[in-house]
Length: 241
Image 1: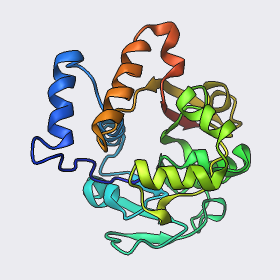
Image 2: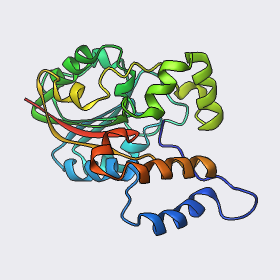
Image 3: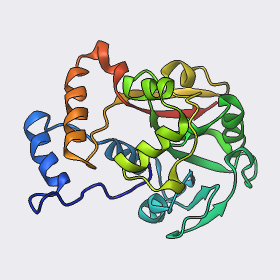
Image 4: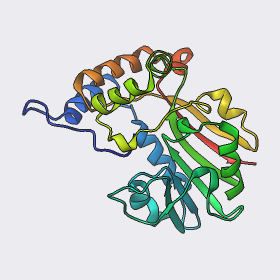
């Protein structure tokens, strides 16, 4: 999903975000949301010398927020968002209009699950990255029951309808998923890349209160290290060899 505002009004009382955060502070005050983990990594790796591409950028909110930290920052997407802001290139990730070894950093936020063939997409990313350049990615974890069960049992039209209804995602922001690169093994065995960092992280969604509670319970149940692999999201940093 894109960088959408998740808090909504609920019965005139506290909005979902404030209500959820009050609970979270009591249950796990050290918790970091997936977008906080992702943003922290951008702050770490983007410098005044960085040439950075944000692929699958949506409305380009990430470039708008962090682009001033970089030498050059460009959002890339296969569709042009109506609310687009900041430097943007319309392009397919498989055919990026950038020179070989011209980019220091690539970010992929909920994009790689849409790669129909793992290695061919990453080969193109490898081409444009400089040696030692990095990919920061946040994606779904195919080992999580919240991901693999809908994939197995829900036909795409029904899953599409549920995502738009329950998660309040715009229809134009939903694409077919393939999960070819959505496991530790898949990312650690990519040709031309070394996984510098890999972790499983939880998703606590603010869209609806009952949904927040379900995901919070799952976060608690998977708090033991042997069960981390069942968490809903993967965060990784890959370095081009």
